[in-house]
Length: 326
Ligand code: NAP
Image (tube, rainbow, N blue to C red; front, side, top):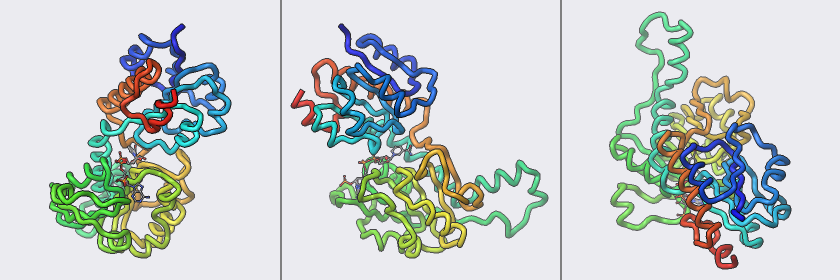
């Protein structure tokens, strides 16, 4: 009897076909939203799950799914998974690191430039016929070339953002849990500083931290008070890393110049007042959303699932102890 797998979200036909060669697959290809209740129902009796970042697999869910052996997240961030609980229960969990670095770093740069130059406000003005004549003092933004960027979380994506900043002649500061090696610092011409120094000195503050209890509200009113009035905040990490209410206040009061956001505290809902602000650029959690990268992510999750359910250690296993115990 082949193992059974539930795929919670729409997936490329190519990756799905690979999965179907090995398993009996129940796929939510219509991509209709799956409630927590439906998720549990469709995962009952399944050996594997291919999940997205909005599917919460915590201890209570795992407790009701004794047959489940592996959960393969199609995302690098895995704050939707309780890895410690899964390890205790011998359930493997995997993510998709690496393949989305450049795509996500590109989107970060799209937001940096769009926020610095007020692209969405300018675009809306042109479309609405509000642009009547060229004016010397209208739509004035901030320069980026030659300025200072502060990267919070100097991992795979943070370094991708730093690499691009070199092309813009920027000074690169970073604050992270651990200091990078000297050779990495030289490669990216990056200086390790504490968080306060980074906030005080950066023209662009870009967040690339995972969401964890330590990073929740990493940026809030105290941090906005330290930032330059001309600074731009970019969040392509996870919504709760920023206190969104405090951000609305800071943007309204022009405490900072602008923000570019791809993620939100209560996605897809926005904090009250955010959508009406002219100095924020908003994208709908599309950091890794390119045709090539989404296919790579799906294939990576499928490869992890095939390995895990055929007795091999998946390459992107988050909890090796669960494999050892299997
Ligand atoms: P990564 O390589 O693990 O990098 C994360 C970095 O943050 C690491 O350098 C890590 O330090 C550091 N860090 C962790 N906890 C910290 C803390 N409490 N304080 C300071 N630094 C801390 O991860 P990645 O692949 O770059 O991805 C980063 C995050 O981006 C993901 O977790 C995900 O949530 C988000 N993301 C979003 C999108 C999107 O669509 N918007 C797409 C992809 C990823 P260590 O070196 O000590 O571990």
